Image (cartoon, rainbow, N blue to C red; front, side, top):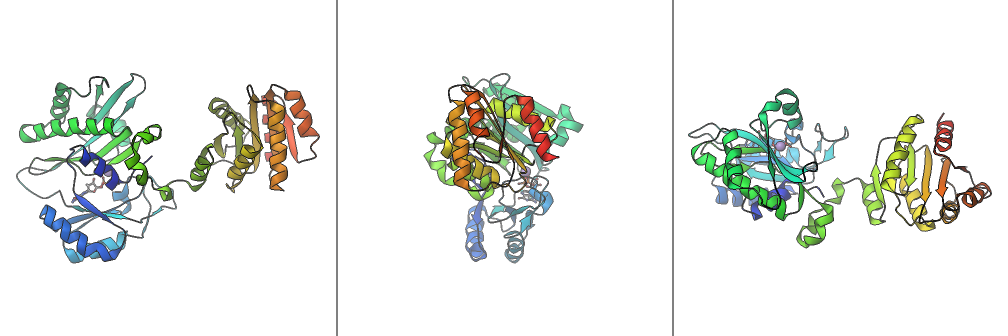
Length: 396
Ligand code: GDP
Ligand code: MN
């Protein structure tokens, strides 16, 4: 589950991580109220207005702007709220901005220069440890840093059974070139950030930038937080944080039906049981000159109602020109799946794209007969290659 910046920052703050303070709003009427509250809390009337969408690079797209007075704030908020924001990380259609975060300006001048760092935490699957990645090059995208100046990216591997050790937190602060108060603040920041990551069952924290203010405080100015879906049952209080409007609507619907579906850009819809076979099927489609329109694992029980649900989901994508059903009957019997396909097809009336069904495993021959004798516009195949050839034939 991906979170908005303001939600991610809230979780950080709950675990003692220092953040750039702010308040979120979704209409112009609240500006007066919100800015007054913020000024009271922070002492400044310079604010930064930040579009809340599930994509980074907002600054580049005009979704992050500074306002140096209350009247400027009104103009800036009305220009961002409701805008269609296109960033390097959105599709070319962009995303509608439904909420903005009004935050205190934290780049004020003072005794020292401000500095921007990059800090992220994620699981290193190779070592089975949590990994803190950090860099002196904050504020720009980390992919560019990795390409051009990889020696400026550091990593600290954390054994989950020990947690972040004090010497590790000090090493982070040292490598970032900090000293004095900022050094101490950074060790605290890293320690609390790691705790927040573990306690929230996150799969990703990306804080870019982490800011050293001119008076040597360390704080999160941005927050990209992803919570592990498999751990959501432990966090009932996070339930309301999911913003379905930011997610792919077909994927949301598939999720409600218990189907494992990922939308892709191609033209061949796939219906497969098992994630491994689904991956292999997508390779096969590519080899046959097509592009998979989706990843879809229907799971173990490919009965008529599931097959029908899967058909409906696949056909919501207007790019689909053919559907390949590839089911291995290990526990599930092929003849039952075939009957499911036939029943689902009849229930749906007409399906306007060619369908190729490849059933292999228990009772595969009976299944093929069922399909061939159904009188429906469905082609059967036994071998993988045969299925691929038939996909190629209908596409050309
Ligand atoms: P992103 O572009 O989606 O990654 O959004 P960020 O939250 O990282 O903000 C983009 C940039 O806006 C940051 O890298 C900062 O340089 C700038 N920024 C953020 N907060 C402030 C602020 O309080 N004052 C000023 N002057 N700039 C800010
Ligand atoms: Mn950022």
